[in-house]
Image (cartoon, rainbow, N blue to C red):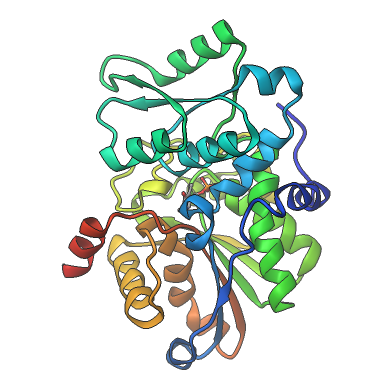
Length: 320
Ligand SMILES: *Cc1c(COP(=O)(O)O)cnc(C)c1O
């Protein structure tokens, strides 16, 4: 295992991504504040490049490659936001990117990844293992594998969103962060510890995918089957060897929300704030609404982690 990142790594990551990543806006809504009885600050990573915070971690990780790694390139297996984040970062930095994707991945994801110039290797998810294919490519061509969350440079990069939020808002009473594999939450915890030590930080998971909560209670990483939830960016089966210890040592608690709560928050963001968020992106807001009573009169931050949902799916979810 590599060394765990510190807040200093978040600061260095922020220097590396500045001028490449957007400094996303922090939005507020007086009507929503009145309804919830608190002051809400939404860090809008749906407006980040490629539509999610994952650009931060991917760009930071690729920026740290040495000359040999840059020449050979990077490989990852993901069909989601991490793939697009690496593809765009690689294009910007002139590093070849190979993405191992299931042959039945959504056409829009495939098109987006190819559109950024990545080389896509497809596999049959029923008969082949993406880990084996990825490892074989890495061995044969000297590619560096960058995982979606369990890597110190990825975690440090993801922490820059919370760093920007605290710099803009000052102290907060609570911060709600979407939780899949824990890259975003662990990075946010490093930032919160340094910039707002009295701020309570919560990880928010889909109800069906409560492996993080179970791991926190058990004191060790608990693995679950791929959960059935509309939050496709948080369908991870377990926290990482690097993300878990940071979360275990610093998180205030992990809470879960239902798919219905996610849709309800998507609707609130769309109708009231004219913001398009993907279901996973709404985990933080749904969690903040769930605990609104506890933070009555307080200042509450939310990381709105991404906005990559196609319009037909957006309409379908909201019409239910
Ligand atoms: C990846 C992702 C998450 C979860 O992030 P982790 O670092 O895996 O916990 C949340 N929201 C969106 C939009 C994502 O793409």
